[in-house]
Image 1 (tube, rainbow, N blue to C red):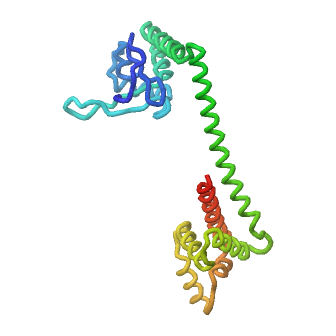
Image 2 (image 1 turned 180 degrees about the horizontal axis):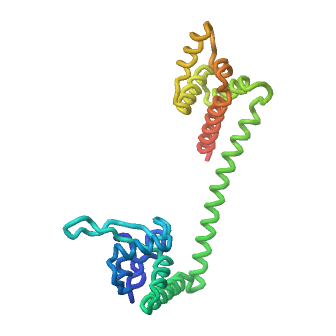
Length: 249
């Protein structure tokens, strides 16, 4: 309740949240409707009967304790409050609903530009928002182009094992490191991505099949995990492309 701003208070308070939503305190609405039933029973019946959804039509928060357990309070969206007032089907409910409608009209009127200067400022802000959105979309497109460029510059002819080697070799060239070091980066990335230990897997496979030598690409091929490996290498290249792009900005 501390973050709410009162925007109307003739019949009962109407609040505005930090995100601009108009809300009404359920207990305050209950009091103004002169409902005979106690508040918890009444509000829970209305929520159940008319299918109001938590965090869509209303939210809850803990109220003050009167010596026992803290009360549960309800913040109703203004549309929800209007519907509840209407279904009470009495004169007081109709009066409160009309009050809510007038509050909405007045608030919209206040937010409309009052002069040419206000209109210019509003349009400038809209243009700024559009420009920011376009810049973000441009960055996303640049990332996609980097990714496509990585695929274009890698020899797609040949099997997945050859492609994986080419991707790791490209990663080594991009980072100015030796090919074996790039493979260590790949191994670390593969282990993190699939929560495994590639070195242990290769060792176990060699012992099981009596092999003296077995490279990582060979193991990944025989274990049917080359597609997984290519995904990791692609992610490494894509991340590097993003970093390089940021450095150039």
